[in-house]
Image (cartoon, rainbow, N blue to C red):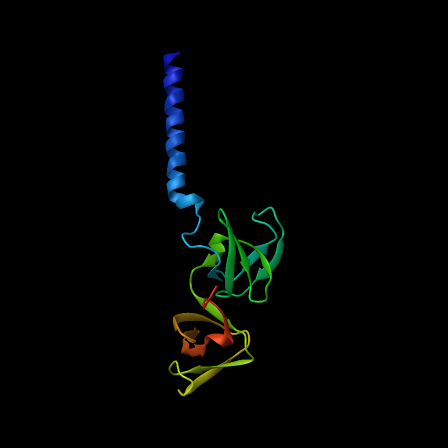
Amino acid sequence: MGDKISGFHMKGFAIGLALAGAAVAAGPAGGAPSKPTPYWASIAHDEARMRVGPSLDYPSNWVYRRRDLPVKVVQVLGLWRKVQDPDGAQGWMHVRLLSDTPTAIVRSAVAPLHGSPSDGSATLFRAERGVVGRLADCSGQWCAFDVKGRRGYVKTSDIWGATDP
C-alpha cells in the first residue's frame, strides 16, 4: 500500500509541476496583456475570423482577408480579444490572429504622403481611401506611413489606426 501512496503522490507532484509550467508559459493572468484596453493591434494573417463570442464554438460573423488591417482591442478575455474594425464592427478574435505592429487605414478620400511631416513639403504620392500601411514615428499631427515599401508622412486626420485609442 505504501507504493500506491508514493506513486499517487509522485503522479500528483508531476501533474502539479506540469500545470505550474503551463501557467508560467502562458504568462501573467493566462496571457492577459500588460497594457490596458483599449489598445491598437493589427491582423497578423492573410485570413482571420471574427467571432460573435470568445471561443471557437461561436460562429464567425466576419472573415478578414487583409493582413495588417488595424483593429482596436476593446476587451480581453483569456486568449481572446474583442476588437473593433475600421467600420465599427465588433467581435472576438484569438490573440494568435493579432499583431502589435502599428498600422492604419486611409479614411479620407485621398491622403497625400509628404516627404517630411509638413504641409509645405513635397507630395511623394497619394493614397486612396482603404489603403493600409504600417506606421512609425508618429508625433503631433503626422505619422511616417509605409505602404509596401513606399514611404511618406501622412496626417493623422487622414487615417484610422494606431494613433490614439
